Image (cartoon, rainbow, N blue to C red; front, side):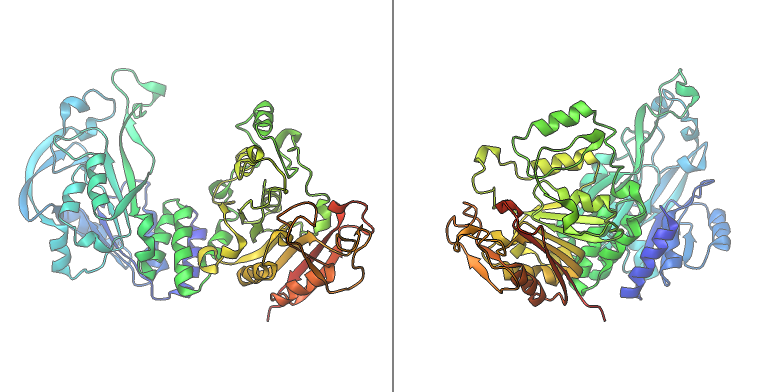
Length: 548
């Protein structure tokens, strides 16, 4: 975790919710040499936050309390399933002490587990988590970190009320019974699922190797996976039901544990509920953290032969997309990339690519530094006559995304109509590409209105235009030159023998349509003067919003 990025993210959250504070339970707080818990930083970043930590030894808690910063308190309390007297099995190393007896016969089979061998048996009084919280007036917990050698499920069973408002749990789990009759991962997972959580991921995997060989000169080498820390989060299908502040907290905790996609989902829902732009800030924070959002666009995991075989699987390509090793997909668009006048630097920009098809402009924007590009298409236009068996909606896009090494987070794609775009679902974009789509729409001005509502800054539009061609006036060379304000309607196949071509405007008309949608600064240009073929009768408009 990058502390500077966490600080930046916390500052952004504090701007939209200045009173946010966390209540955290750290159960099994024995500090290990050289290790610190990242979530301890939340006490500094969110004033008023507190961490309530539990460790068995009273003297150790006294020492920890003397050294602890404000907001962190240590309690010498043994948590369990209920208020009762329990046996306490003390082991060679304090970190392996447990309410469950070590299974020494199994431990002896593996290297490096001598620390868990039994030294003595005493007893201790346990209390349930719900009892402790009631006694100390704690009513709302956000996060639980627990590591108590097999007794985690006992604490959960005794803390069902405490778990009601928790959004994230990190719990140690075992996969084989290192202690007699201890619950294993499946038992913990079933219980927490019933409480409204879902398993998210493991934080690494630990274990040992069978005696006597020492593999790689490392007695702790884990050929047998034995335990891990498991992350549980609230069920993602129920996130919309969480209060706004819980979404923020789950988002911050997910960042700490390396899940920016969950952070994004939580912030996205918060933005929709509160009309904020935390998602945009998250992308700004992560743009420089390339290992999380993307892998280098050199396809190290695919040979040139494998890439070419992938390309050859598809009978039709619309775009010419540059892939590693000089391989280019066999399409024909765009006719002239430079004619689109897209900025060479899109660093930190969030881009929407409408009518993405194979994804040329999606991947081009990423190449130019975009933080995220969202691609949409409904493939309602198959160039009029493309055979159905050759229609491979999104398959070509997905193939290129994989070959180029981009993550689904950095360039997600959605099968949908432009009319269905809403800010509450997608947030806002800095730049919008609207290429080769407007003239296929029955309601082009409505589409521009939808896009303007999502756009912070600028839109680039490319369309067929009437300046040099009109099927009603005689075809090529018989259009509406100059600044004529005209748009023609085609109920059948009048334009280009394509049933999906509905409206085509002149360049002047296209520019004014973009202006009417809310872009005050307008610039328009043609692909070329005096085109000799219909595909070259194209025009461009760049619209930009004024910022006060």
